[in-house]
Image 1: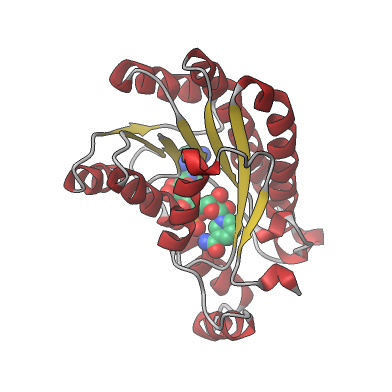
Image 2 (image 1 turned 90 degrees about the vertical axis):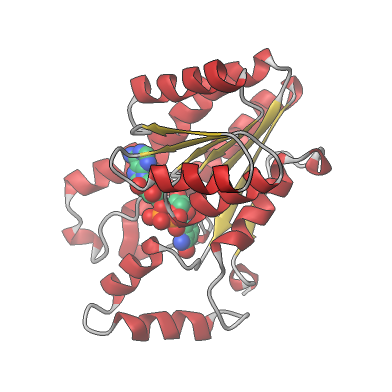
Length: 249
Ligand code: NAD
């Protein structure tokens, strides 16, 4: 399995979960991030891992992580296309253009490039499973994080298009739409919502969720592992909220 954003909250939990399932893990994240720790975590779970420092928005980096996956483990069966950034938080009329471009580069182009270069590797092995990380911000409007919402709606669209294009050739593509999950990203969003008392934003969001709490990264990882397994053999093009019921409203 190739996991992007593997040093982050959800990616790391996924690396650990896939390792426990016996997968060999290619952990992809920005250079200087906590990649070594993730590789050690996978090792500790008794599975094989390689860490690849890469920027998912650069095609040469994406080609490289695919090449390393093939060289080290013989190919790619599962791809968790998960790296993402929240961007700027605030009124859309003040949204900095360069941050808008950055969010689109990582969250949208990064997911596209991943699909572009991973699919041929999967086809060489007769198929596989892709899970893209969208968000509930890909399903409903979120005016305070304008670029993020745009990019995650695009991830939903790319998931559906990939499912139709590659399903007939044995590659299933699905998307997960988490929120709110206990990771660095939610800490950043809480600070953006209430800079003086981010803990209050946390409590409000937890209390406002039908389950009365945030989700844990492991709860996302469990479903991603299921989507990539043969148990999910008829799931393709699905867009799945993992949100404690928030989108049921
Ligand atoms: P996180 O910040 O802990 O992890 C994101 C990881 O992506 C980080 O390790 C970061 O270094 C990496 N990354 C960022 N830019 C990159 C790039 N250009 N190339 C390679 N790696 C890069 O946050 P998380 O919550 O684990 O987020 C994982 C995914 O889940 C993201 O796509 C995010 O948008 C999505 N998501 C999270 C939540 C939530 O509540 N935490 C909700 C909805 C969606």
